[in-house]
Length: 412
Ligand code: UDP
Image (cartoon, rainbow, N blue to C red; front, side, top):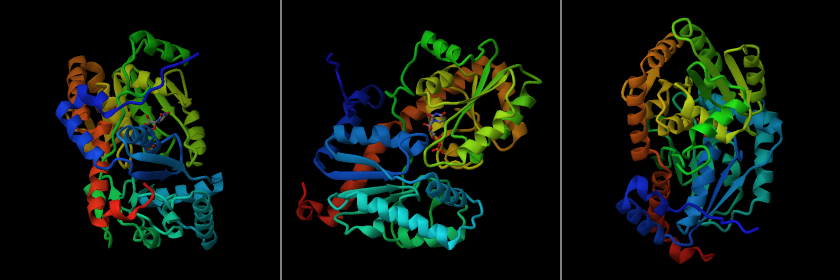
């Protein structure tokens, strides 16, 4: 059987970004034709970084930039060390022994041996897990550290340790200007983006939505409130449950907490087990990687909640806003840059406030619709994948000039 296999191209985005933007991006991309780039991160699914890299690396290839995506390997005990680091970067405390730092560096060294990155014009390392890889190569071109976490208040002891690696990079990229750090290398700020053509984000018929909800026995007789997140304490699932319990006294509804567990997040199971105890008729907890269910829930829910306590960016917010959902988000990190409070969503700073906004939105369908329309426009203008592609193309072009790569990198 022959099937038509295809990649999305920048031209496919014309319907959203216009012909002029398509031409501008493709002109810039042509100048970088055959550039050889590698992205490295620590999980192939289950979090925002994988969600971004999966379509971005394909779009880069379709724009003529030879782009690879590699995922480092490690056992859960390695990832429990890096998860502690992630928590500490988001402001938690940390108490790693010398032995754990040694394991971290040893496993990354082993990954460096297995991954031959000596041939690339650009290497982009995502987040702290693969950070020390930079030590083990003779650089042929710039190495960039792209950190996605909420760096509002990083643990200083850990940051000072990581600095030894960070400053070996040519540039660090953070999600927001307010995550800027005191570094000797240049810092840039890139926001993530979503792929409107993916299974998660593309249009879905009402019957397909209903089929997914029925499959999981999600009742649709009352308005649905949902939060879709990795099972992670920073996403505050217990806070969502409490807000729901307050809200439903005034407006009947059903809560669906959908989550997954990323391969680089061994704490997920514990968080999942703790909220399982809260399940009841109207509090449905699902742990499953079902991309169409994410799409269906974001489309059908009366209110999408993302009540994070820390959030680097929050792609779940972007995805829901793209679908015209009314989103209630924690007033933290990247969520604040997506939701304009009262215009294209609501920002909340407490459980009570979250409950109040849920009730208000359930009761006011025209408000939901108005907010949803603004939300979709916001995403269309700011957070589609072509914008992210152009950020990287501009970055590569700026280095092209500095490093004169065309003359020196002989592998193209
Ligand atoms: N996600 C998913 N299934 C789930 C929970 C989350 O596919 O059950 C996806 C979600 O749609 C989003 C990503 O995982 O694309 C989470 O990214 P976000 O930036 O919101 O948070 P992170 O997990 O990176 O902290």
